[in-house]
Amino acid sequence: MSGYNENVKKKPYGKLIVAGIVSIGLYAILLMKQDLVNSYFALGGVYAFLPILTAFLFSFVHGSFTGNFWTVLGIEAAKKKKEVK
Image 1 (cartoon, rainbow, N blue to C red):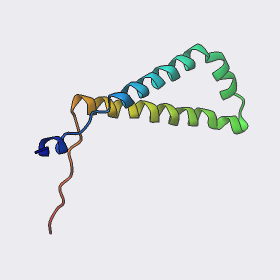
Image 2 (image 1 turned 180 degrees about the horizontal axis):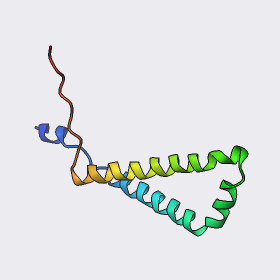
Image 3 (image 1 turned 45 degrees about the vertical axis):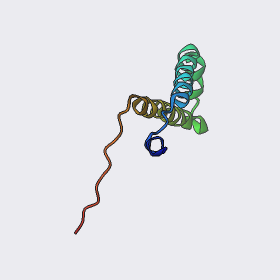
């Protein structure tokens, strides 16, 4: 019987590695191209949205990496129980 295998979740090693590489790449580009990034961020107008979009991008990628990291380690959020009235 394969009842044991049905309850075992696959750990997202691939997603962890990809998100980690993308995260490192984003930080490397940001640090290596600081002058270019600062010049675009300081232009104003429509370019004022660039820092906001950049923060969302970094947050999404880093959050994905962190979530997969904890999943690979076996740490999951507690599931809420429904309250019966």
